[in-house]
Image (tube, rainbow, N blue to C red; front, top):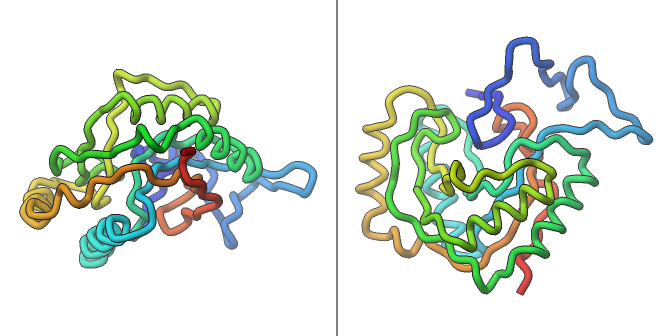
Length: 212
C-alpha cells in the first residue's frame, strides 16, 4: 500500500496537487539542466551505523510487512517537508551537520505511543532535550523553514498506518520493554531524504556524520 505524504509529519497530498508519473516525475512539472525541479525533502537524525540502527530497522520492517505497509529508515525528523533542488538540499544538510555538535547529542526514548496520524501511527517518544531542540532549530534554519520549539515533538516512528493504533502500540510496548534502553543512541548522522510522493518513492540523497 502506498501513501502520498511529503514527509514523516503526516502531510497528505491536497486535492488538486499534481501526482508523480512514471520515473518519479511530477505530472505537468518539468526540470531542466538549467532549472532543476524543487521537490519535497526532509532532514533526519539517524543512529550511527551499528546494532542500534539495525535493531530499529528490523522493528520497522517486521511491523510493516504484515500490514502491507512500506518500510522506511528509522529516524528522528529535524526538518520536514521543505522544497529544494537536490543540490540545495545537500547544502542545507551540510549547514545543519556543521551546526550540531555530536558530543552533545543523545536520543533517549520515553515510551511507545499510539498516534493518530499516518506517519505517526505508532512511535517512540523521545526526550525533548536542549541539544535535540537545538539540532532541529539548526536544521530548520538550514532548510529555510520556521521552527517552533513549543510545537516540536521529537519522536521515532515505528509503524505507519491508519485507524486505531492502540493494539499495535501495546504489542510494540511489550516487545520493546526489555530492550528500550539499548535503542537509545549518542551522536549519529544527519541525512537528507527526498520525501516527494509515497513512502516507496522516498530516497536518501546525502548523509553526513555530526561534527565532533
